[in-house]
Image (cartoon, rainbow, N blue to C red; front, side, top):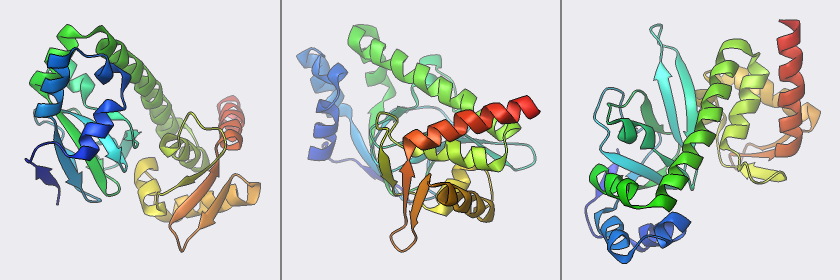
Length: 242
């Protein structure tokens, strides 16, 4: 069950906010407002942070863990829109449009979350140019990911869906070998596939030298650059054959 922290912001929240350029560039009164109204939430795997059809009351910054944005079809199937990673923010689109959540937001792993209430978010948006620039950047990046995942879920073979899911949880700024603390079950939720089908795809990736698997530690080691090449090459081949 998720836990809301009503105590003053922890040192973790303070350090998290101070790590962002937009926050450091705020005038003193807005920095104080942001810090004083921020709260901390901890969620366990499977906990819902927000539900489709409910009011959007906060902007969420992820200190640690993974949060899955997804929608459920009329047949009960899930389609992942995006996977928020450590150091990312979510909920801004719904706040900007002042609409109800149009998707569910669920913790895939134990998550530590910074919550900024809607009135503070609006105050920052109305007063800070650097904050608005930051919002434009993250929303543009997320839109590209939304399109990629929707294409993958509709048109691509399972291996490509798993590959795109791995890239979604990887650090996009690091092209080297990355250790991802994501289980096959969590990856299956992201990709909208069975755990067995994900296991088959990972076996193929291991054979190709794209991933390494440490089952006892629950870790996947991903060669991000080679996986990107695989997605580009196999995805193009899939479209051409279709």
